[in-house]
Image 1: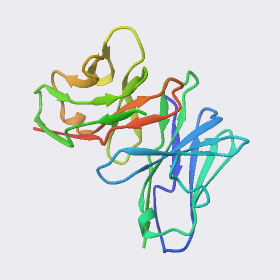
Image 2: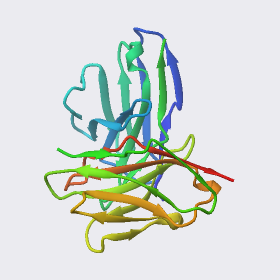
Image 3: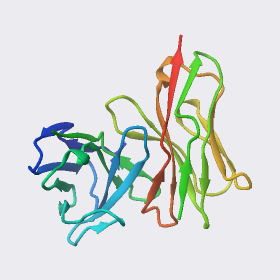
Length: 115
Length: 113
């Protein structure tokens, strides 16, 4: 099946710094990718829709200036957490839709810890 | 707006016993329903989905789920579990365009020998 990768799998950064997370579709092209955030024992919450060649669409309540999304190519989307704070510590997951659109392929997630 | 409720955060069960993981949803419009499984340190993998047609949906690894519109439920079942089924299971609802997925909080299935 289709594979989506994320890098890094884990990252620890200091408060005030920025960190970039990559999401790649390995064997298919994705004009759209999705970024989710998962808090412990909570649901995956959709943060934004990443669109190749255009601006990302953010969900209500998500700060677009803090969570910068760039869909650089048909196989790569990046999420940059700017001026990170401890409350940004979370599990970030990306996904890409199948060609039929009836399924989402998920990456393995990135654990961000801000100290 | 849609929402998904998974009432059981953890379900312990002995190997070869049957299991049911509960999922209820709320939506004012027609929805599509999914169950995903997440093994440790891996991404979410699709178990099964309901788009239309028969309300009993069969998925991979012997799992099945039944869509019940009147009860707004989509419970996941397996008649006999294996140790390898130990994982976290997520129920999800998508909108008609399959663009936005709304997830439940997940149920950790712990199969004991």
